[in-house]
Image (tube, rainbow over all chains, first blue to last red; front, side):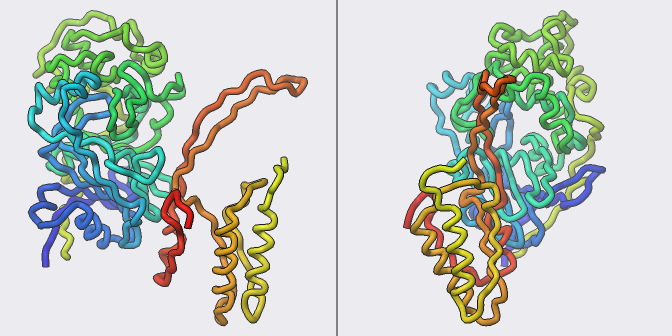
Length: 338
Length: 128
């Protein structure tokens, strides 16, 4: 008999927000120590729940990228959706791609310079290796849909949805702080400021390049996700990764996406911003939530990294009615016995 | 609009007939999932097999009703959105084409209540 540790946020209401499914986060090291592979682990945990459940297995030693191109420590290596104790054999489980290291790829996807500079030798994990759905990187079983490579979940029965950006999930596995509330207009716009990646977790195939908006929907972009609940990392964590990217020489608009969070930190650090490479459609969406060209170009006194980290809650924009709290306050540690 | 070779009505007739005539007693058929189709050509090979399946279930004495639920084989479908601007004379002035993918509930939404499942489907994207 073995047992596998995982963290659970239950379906229902948490901090006033609808959790559309059970949310399960598994440390990849626990899967290895249990002598399991990821599919076995997902099936064992799925068998614990008759309710719809999203299961993400996270390797804290691997790295991945956010949609705006920040490289982060911790990556989803497998994702699943379960319902009635089962996982759909064709659509319910996906493993993620380990991206082979290549200088050519780093030239073509220049935000990956962070790999060489900050995380040399680390495994880089991105979107699914192989999937049966034509477009979405989603695992589906019964009432459960675990979408966008494990960063967005929704109930097929109620159609309620929740955003779970990768940094928040890493904090849940580590027991760090998370922010919970509504996504709001600023993050709704920021999600669209993507970088081009062949194996991207959400929009693979280098469908866009840095400086473009994936939304291309003008003043409608701010309302695409604004009403949806979100569990994200605390803003201090996000600030840390933005600072790290900027110090690695990443230029917003050229190497990393000009999301409001990135621009806010870059402006205070007096870091260069490639205004010429940002397309007008991206500027229009940014301006719709107050980040006009004039605001971006406005000269401000440079502040220290420490100041940004200490004041991250005020400096990093985004979220509507969000509160920051320990992830242990909203999740419970459990063990699947098998 | 009606296209040449439309067989959708014939498909429906065959299915109702199979439930009516397949067993010792006529069984009602509930057909769901084709409501939005105005016209379509159905795969003939599978039409025959589905008729056979309905007859097989209709032969079970204590079965009182047959349900035929048509769902996307892959629970994400790709669609084209055709956005047309029509002027006062009915002439089309401009068309914008967009894509729209739609996620649907997978088939297990309908199968969780039974363990006796005989899966005769072809692999995704294949005949046979």
